[in-house]
Length: 326
Image (cartoon, rainbow, N blue to C red; front, side):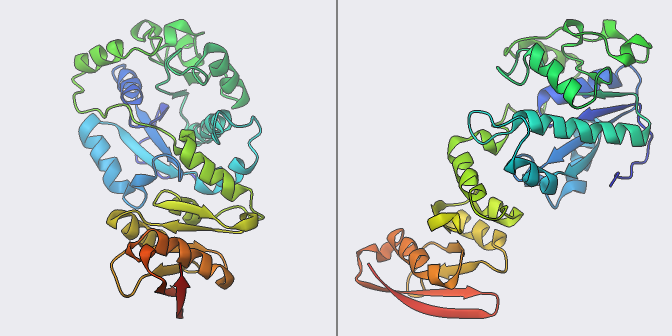
């Protein structure tokens, strides 16, 4: 579905909220063009703003004078993650397919809105794989964005885009940034009076070895994991069941416990210790797996030195108690 916007843009910007994407957008705005920024989110990047998108967009407008819309890619992203056409990176990260997916979406938006260019904050050589010249060119071709895609911060190091060739965007006002250094971007931010930009963040969770291993484990099961199951992996200790049939998450602290309870789906089992303070466990599995989940829960609580421990469980309208012998 094409989101409604109030002003017809001349340019669509892929917006990550990082300094580079802020600068790329503002540089094109400085040329008097109307830019509509788009922030794509999934369970693995940007998902912290889910549920508060309007407030987030208002804050971006207030901070940077950038019009923004947020698009959730979760459903199509989870399907793609099962078998990315161009494979995975070092961990379970489908970086090429991810970038192609976002650019395909941006191209569809540009066509629907009548925009003449798509811009990103990419800088040649900033990332060792995805921002090499050859990889950037390959992504441009595979996403069918040849000539449409422009990287304002490195434009002078790359072939001119259609928007530059037709005079819509002045190439002489663009830049030739390259490499992993941040000094040119920081200097440009000062020039544009941008002072409250975020520090470089970790980016996609799928590049984190520990988290990526959890996600990969779920994808080895018979069914594609659900959104709630993948979000559960972000909180606590992870124990997969045999044959990849499910898993148990054990909270490590109060915040984990709260997030597990918020994130668990109705068909998940919730376990806790009724006679003492301790962690919460969430089981994605069957009733026969409750003993395994309860044993893991006890081993991460004050009950680990006891011989018999009561554990309460509930799921939807069901509930019960079992005794664990450690």
